[in-house]
Image (cartoon, rainbow, N blue to C red; front, side, top):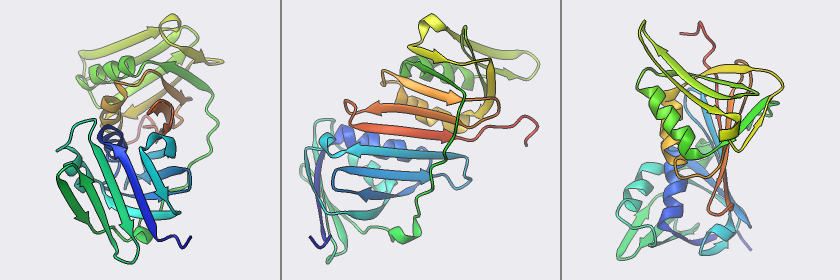
Length: 251
């Protein structure tokens, strides 16, 4: 195999999840196609948020792939996908010799030129030993974060053996507090109370996508990065999201 061809087909709803998720932190991404999966790692320009996503070939309708990397503008893909319905099939082909990507969705044929993927370097994923974790429904987490946003942009996330607490204090009077007891979450692990603060500017777009996810795991510690993990596409897709903490006193 000379690594020249790429020909995959996927349902529109799978493609939307992939590109909507990546678009939470970047405008363009390098997609690394391997024999058995698609691997994407992106970091936002300010290096505050990072996503590592892996989608196994089983999630796709067809998968005829030689190992290769493609750089794509996410906005172009999202614009095209917005014209389709969840069951529509999207066919994506790339021929190295022609240097263009052909995308077909029903009656629509779209041709795009890939980005020079050598300029889009995937970040290294940090190895973090995070002391506490909680697993809850994506809908519960999404609702808590949306409530927090009504008061301010910096959210405090606290975990103790009694449960998870998400709160924001805005000014002198406004506040919101959302609590899920240990009995209201799927799993909770912590040796002692931990608390950290994060920016909702980054969390909120992701939380909208998490609202349909059964189980989302948060891992963090006192003023540690937040690590968010969940699966989609019946377990064939995995998202790992990292968000740097807002250390109190930071501007």
